[in-house]
Length: 125
Ligand code: FES
Image (cartoon, rainbow, N blue to C red; front, side, top):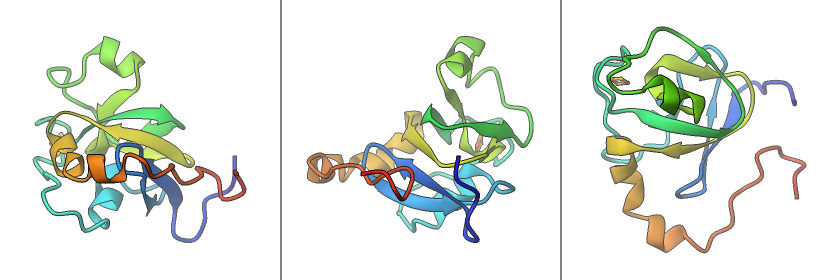
């Protein structure tokens, strides 16, 4: 796994192919907000409301705090679902936005569907 860069790990949102940087001591949601995309819901930022639900498809995260089981069941967690406000990346990763968080990203999904995803690691081809 490549080391963290000065700006953070490379995070790719698979629905749109957008990439953002996120350090290992900040939440995936905090980094995602720097995309500047309108409509990204910011709720409790405490793992309790579920609006920031994502599914980690490739890569690992570490917990920054507990998450509500009302919004991420143990079965879902086993499938990679988590809450972006309560986890930080431990390396580059690909994620899928889910639930309410998917709405602001779905507006451009059709327009970007044919665009190939950027590499997770800079040297990937
Ligand atoms: S913002 Fe409420 S659970 Fe993440």
